[in-house]
Image (cartoon, rainbow, N blue to C red; front, side, top):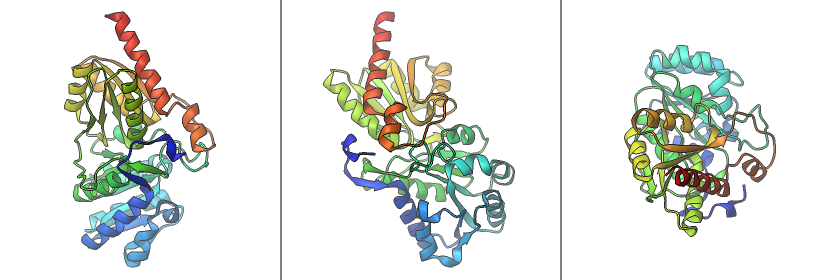
Amino acid sequence: MSQSNYTCGHGPAVACREAFGQALVELGREVENLIVLDADLGTSTKASLFADAFPKRFIQVGIAEQNMMGIAAGLALTGWLPVTNTFACFASKRALDQVRASIVQPRLNVKITGGYSGILAGKTGITHQSVEDLAIFRAMPQMTVLAPSDGVETRAAMRAAVAFRGPVYIRLTRDPFPTVMPPDYVFNIGSAVPMRSGKDVALITTGWMLIPALDAASLLANQGIEASILHLPTVKPLDADAVVEVARRTGAVVTVEDHSIIGGLGAAVAEVLSERAPTLMRRVGICDCYAESASNDDLLTKYGLTPSNIVATAAELLETRRHQA
């Protein structure tokens, strides 16, 4: 992705995988029973940083994700705090039965990290792109689901996940994105993060899509449209009160996610609003299809994950509301 596309940042672009690896090392120094299990992807996800720092607390299981989840369950039952490391596509599908039966149903204290999520997976194509993982993990009882936006939030999310008791899925991205969170940012599981206030339309985001949403809000402002931005780094449990408040205040909602619009953030927001505050809304995301292998910019343009498409979607929604008034 050309970093020039996204100009709203408090700091330089940082890859969330780098922040993830650094956070593991920091937590390893503080939490003596933290142990990391890797399915032969530590070099890609930067879990290798933990392996270098704590080789005796790093287990390389190889390309055996199902076994990795079973081993993590056993370790959790014997007093360890396991973090499993693989790609989102494998954590959510290849190892799903073991995650469900061995970790989530007994509510064991295991943290499951899914790297290379969404469509920006380094030209690996549809086998490695994960556009269903939020829907899968969100539907599982007792599962907490996190999707940080930048390097700062990734480090804070890892810290919050390790402090939380119970199974947690942390959705991580591959590529560098501008830093939008302040250095002293604290991740509160279950809490929304208001990023911008406006009266005309609400852009509700999760994960790295906060960054193009911030640029979209600036473009909308140039058209005289005031956009609120509500960032939801916790997809489950969702901050329903914050969603209802911004929907009632603006009367128009656009959800923005690097995930299928079926079952992900857009679906979660629609569920809340349909029950508590029916609101005109649109969903920006992957529209019930698998993507392709291509450069990031080409993928983002084709599948509409760009500031310009967010702006066009918001403008269309506001035009629809004007005609209905």
